[in-house]
Length: 416
Image (tube, rainbow, N blue to C red; front, top):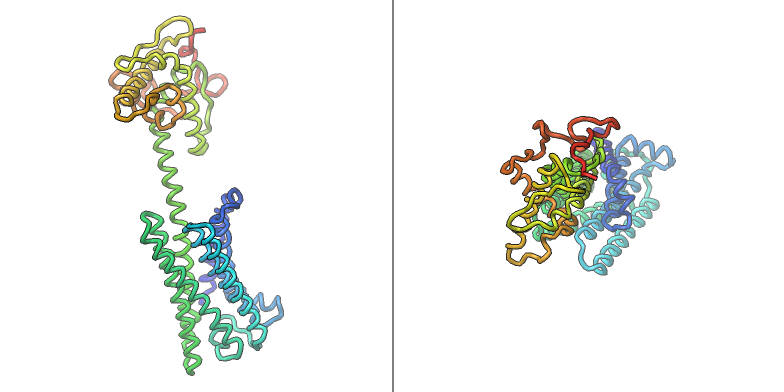
């Protein structure tokens, strides 16, 4: 079997682990994060050390023929225990019960690893075998027991994993259920790997040669099993991350109409955000800009009537010019929003207060939606567009001023 089938899964697992390193560092105290941080690199180690070139190199470096065999067996066994512990931690439940199950699993498989190393030390394996160690030494005392113990322990681990996934999958839905199904399918393929190895070993006991199952079919099943399990473990987390990103992008987009109005109201230049900034930073900047602008409009919003929102009056400290029309649009939208809150059964008495509006991003989004609806009716600017009808980004109002941070806001500044 080509070494690519060993090194490619190892590389993919290492890349997956590297992508998770920042999260592992930030959340190392989380038991689930620690479990993932153990399972993924162990899987990469298994495939790397099981590759024939690595097997030969390890044997040469240690000076012990077939030293790679118990090494790989021990790592696979540790990986099996780590996957079960990850599943137990992921599923949650009572802390004492979960911790007892994790300790029992670690103790049982730790004992198996010690037994594997002891049996190899007692056995005699003088001839180096890079791919068919299992079948070649399947009748050798102590080594025979080591091989069978390894395969039985691996089969038990995959069976337990499949049962846990099946039970939990019946209680959940969505991407979590899909991930559990994939992990369970990987467990079934892992059982296929073990069955293939046992068939080849059993054939040697009866004088037959089925080594091809052990050297070709079984490793292929193991690689596919590992791939499915990695996807299964990653899918719920990746899906949740994409869902959060989608929700944040939707809210960022819906805040656009209100933000465009606030840009024309505030008597100062807004902070420029570089085009390459992350969505989180752009969303935070937009929200902060809106809240700052609403604080300036607070005197008008505090006096707004539910039935009829007044226009901002002229005078000292009042807005003037185009800013008046924009502010009036916000005030009217606030009046409409406040009216809907006060007429809704069971609504909080202060649900439409200015402070609750500023503090709640949900209310900011609803106010922006109201602005978008009212803008065409009142002849105001279209949502997301300036006076010239073109869309604008987060870092200016259609041009650059002398300081490079946007155009002059002089026509829209408050009267001092």
